[in-house]
Every structure is written in C-alpha cells, then in structure tokens.
Image (cartoon, rainbow, N blue to C red; front, side, top):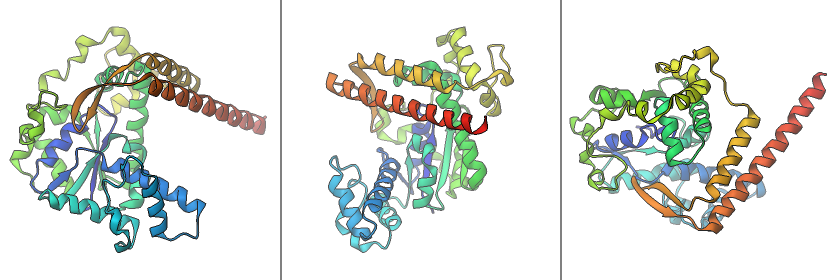
Amino acid sequence: MSPFFIIGVPRSGTTLLSILLNNHSEVYIDALSVGRRMVLCYEKYLHYFALEPQADQAKVLEKIFEKDNRGDIRSVVDYKNIERYASVQALFQKSVEAQAKAAGKIYWGDKTPLLINHIPEVLQLFPKARFIHMVRDARPNALSLMKRQYTDLRLSAQQWKDENAHALVHQHVIGKEQLIVVRYEDLLTDTENVTRSVCEFLQLKYEPSMIDPQQDAATLDPNSYVKPKIEVDKIDSWKKEMTAQQIRQVEAISGDLMQRFGYELESGLTAKQAKSLTYRRRIWLHQKDLFVNLFRAKRVQMVQRKLRTVRLPITTRLKHFLAGSLQLWWSDLVNKSFEGRIKKKYE
C-alpha cells in the first residue's frame, strides 16, 4: 500500500483521525510530522543540487545531513547507509517502513495538516500517495485558530478558505482515487461509517477497535490533545462562544466555500456576498498579529499530541517579529512592483 497523508487546516480534526488510524493493527503513524521533514529534505535537495549540479546523490544528501543541526531530517531517514538506496524516494520509503516494522506494523501514514500546501512535492516523492483532507466548520475552526495560534479571526477565516479551496483544486487534479475530503463533524457523529469509508479508500480492512481513542494509551494522559472519548456534544459549542459579529466576520469571508461543504450560514449573509480579504488587508492584519505576539511570552503548543505551555524568550519573539515583518514588507514590495508592471502593460 502506498503511504497516506492526513492534511487540512490546523485544528480541523486531523489528530483525532490519525489516532483512530494508528489504532489499526497494520498502520503506523508517528506522533511527530514525518511528512514535513521529508518535504524539507526535498526542498534542500533542490537547493543544494542547483548550487552543485555535478554532485552525485550521495554527496548532496551528505551536505543536507551536515546542515541538519537539530536532527529533524536524520531522525526519519537511514542517513548512515544512503549508498544503499537507488533514489531519494527509496531512502524515505524504506526508512519509514523500517520504523513501522519496528512498531509491529506494515503500512505507514503521516499527519501533517499544512502539507495541504505541499502536495506537489509529496507527489514527487510518492506518486501514488493518498491524501485524506479534513475539513471543519469555518466558524469553530477560525475561533480555535485565533485562540491557539493567536491569529486574527479574519485571517483565520481566510486561511480556512484558502487551504480548503486548495484541497478541492488538488482533488480535481489528481482525482478522488488519491484525495478524499472528510468532514470533522461527520467523523464525530458517525465515527464507524466514516472510519469504514476511510479504510476502504486506503484499501484497509476495517477493525472495530479503531474507533476507540483509548486504544492509544497517550489519550489517557491529562495533557493529551485528544480525549479518551469522542466528544460529540462540543460540535455546536462555538454558537455560545462566538458573538454575532464574529460569526458574521467569518461568514463574510468564507461563506461561499462553507456552503460548498454543506455548512449553513447563520448571519443573514448569502454565499454570493462572501468576499476574500484584499491583499493589503491581509498584510495589515498579519503585521498587527506580529506586533501583538511580540509581547506574548507564553504559548500553548501541541508536542507529540500533548498540550504544553511554553515560554518564549524575548530574543526569540523579537526574531520572529523582525523576520515576519521583513517578509511582509518584501512581499508587499514585490506585489506593488508586479501590479505596476501589469497596469503599465495594459494601459
């Protein structure tokens, strides 16, 4: 079976699905993101090979591993025996298969939500890879992103719209045989049937024990991101947590795509009235977030499926602020230049 990847907007149920699939007797999913590190290695390979086009595969890989200071890439590949593999693809495939075998499993998958933005790169490494895209109601999803990632609600709604639209585009390109969309709400309310359909898509035999999160001992930890029981009653909790203005803000941006996924609008707006944020508006909101987070020392993050409160030193926060601001200013400059050339060309 080809590898599979669980993708989607963060906070859309990808972790829950990964735990259910990891409960399968033949499936291995690492708690850390294997996919992100593979894409990172692939991008570095392109970069280093462009600098030294006469270098062979082993030399390029050795350079990547030398620069891998934190060991992110080395932790997922058999970097000590790279000469054994005929291709980078084989290196990744066999390395992760060995990890799965060590865990007593046969097949492997990965949960990295933001790989939705790197599907072409994944397909370069694994042409027959399958993707399960999780989608959640934009309103609680945007609210959750705002709380956990400290992002403006409007930017969160725009992220929801952009990345879920990407999923539909990729589904049109590679087909439903390689990419399916699963609604988080359906997984909660009809867990068995949805899990059965996912197993069918992956060509796996369904196992009843899969749908019990407690099969994964990590869920019993008080700090576990996923609870021991599936909490259906929280599906509509956003209706009590969000103000009418917040609901309208999200629907004003994402309402058209929300309706496409079967979510009803509640603010009185129609799908046709939904409009994405302008480029300049996005820049301004991103800059505002950078400034606010400069003074936010504590963050809640998920580490190996557990929630951790971390404290970021002022030097780290300042670095993020300066790097983020520089990136925004540069992209704005490029955008203005591009707009000017287009305008001049067609005047």
